Structure formats: structure tokens, C-alpha cells
Amino acid sequence: MATDITNVRFSVFPCGYRRADGTVVMRQQPQQTQTIEWAYQWITSPVAASVATIGYRKMLPIATREEKNNFKLEHFQYATFAGTFSYRKAENLIQRSPFMVLDIDHLTSEDEAHALQIRLSQDKEVETALCFVSPSGVGVKWVFELPEWTMNLDYKQQFDRMRSYLGFRYGYDADTSGSDVCRACFLGYDPECIVNPKYVLNSSTHEQQQLH
Image (tube, helix red, strand yellow):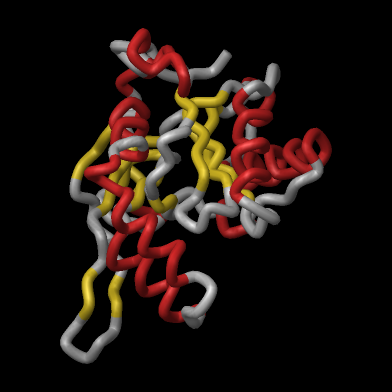
């Protein structure tokens, strides 16, 4: 879908903010466009995302659903891997990317999440771009290039096809909210994030995190 796949762009949005009345608001206008390599560097950087991720995981056992949601909105940047947007609405799509994200939540442990992360990254039919454990520690974000056999479908149909593929091949279900082309994907900290080497210009320095 793109001549220079390493430079395919998607939108990145800044952290949300808290209004004077205490309401936490998600920012809907992108701060920048970025690449898979940038996302990999951000996710694996302890400076960029580790403090928020550690704080979020510590609060999970005791926080309410609203508190957890507000913390994510305030402390994590997010990406719309499916493309670039002028505003985070489907009708404000500027350019589709070849990427889709499947979000697999509510796993039993971080060990299960890392094991699934490795399995997905080794898929022979769907080429992974990026695969990382979600901010909660018990979910996986699988960012992949849409396969040729989905090219004649619209985004919702592509999502349904790939969700079915995930269930049939691996026995896991994906969050159905990912069927929205402008779905937000929060970028937490995962030092074991797996990246496809073709997206990393200096790939020799990342051997432990690359696809095999």
C-alpha cells in the first residue's frame, strides 16, 4: 500500500487534561504524525512511558473504573495506527495507513501477555509491524499490516475478518471497539516490545526485540 513502508505515517495525540471542574478530557487533535520506528522507540524508552505505566499498574487493584480511565487519559499519549487525522473522527481521516490494531484484553497474567505477544509476532500469514503489552500488563496490542486478502473490504469488514482470524488461529478475542478506524491506542511502556526489523533503520541495535 506504500512505496516506502518505513515512512508510513499515523497520527499521535498528546495526553489529555483535567478541567477546572475535575473532568478529564481526551485530546482529539493530533500533535504530530509518526512512524512505527518512532512508536517502538517511545514504547521501549523508560524516560518516555515507564513512570505512567508503573503508576497505572499500581493503582489497578484498588482504583474504580473511572479513576483508571482518567489516569490513562491524563498520562498516556495515544496513536491512531490506521491513519492520519485532522481531528479524531472517521470523517476527518486524511490518509489511511496499511496498519490495523487488534487489542486483546483481560489476560490472566503478564506472562500470558508476553507469550501471546511472541506467538502473534511469529505469524506467517499476517506481518507484524509492532507488538507490545498494554499499559495494564494483561493485554496485548498487535499492530500489523493488513494482508492482501482484506484489501477489497472497508475498515469495519477488515476488522471483522481479522478478529475472526485471531479467534480461529489463536483462540483469543479482540476488543470490538477497534472496528472504528479512528480508535485510540494508548502507548505504555514495554521494554520487550517486538518490532519488525524493516521499520527500524538501525535494526542491528535491537536484535532482542525484533521479529524472527
